[in-house]
Length: 200
Image 1 (cartoon, rainbow, N blue to C red):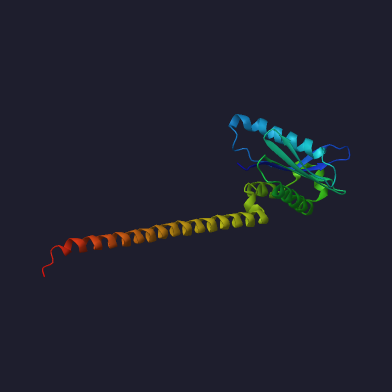
Image 2: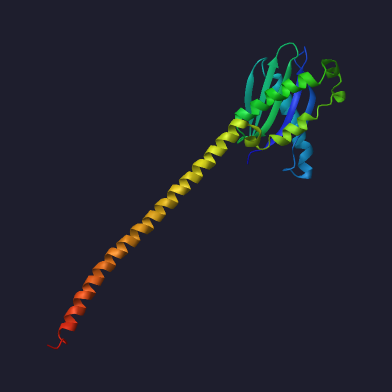
């Protein structure tokens, strides 16, 4: 099942250490007792991958059943976005979101507030985490591809139904041919039977 578990925006300081500016986790699939540990793991993985993603680079790092997709925008701001998904999540919509969320964050949140991460308010992180749970709805190209696949399936079903109908028509034609042969035999047999009884 395709699932986004975490979405985070981090700032890489001059020392190379990352600071989480905004993050959201979707941990409803885990039990109450697991949520704390899983949340800590997501934060740790986000920070670790962010610190090891070079400026201007995009990368995907797999750990077990999870993949961390990271994008370091580079430049003077040194912002990195990290999205942790299950291994079935498609890469293109992941990087599309990472680029989009960094652009929006950079314009919506002033750089002066980054020094105090608790003061940073960016509700779009939670909205995108929810929206991108279904990559087909979030990514226009995947949406069009899904529609094309659906059309192809419908077209295939239509052709199959025509073939089935054609096969049924062929069976009817064969039956009518067989009926005609039987009718001819019946006529000949009836004629023979009736010929003995004709009075002249």
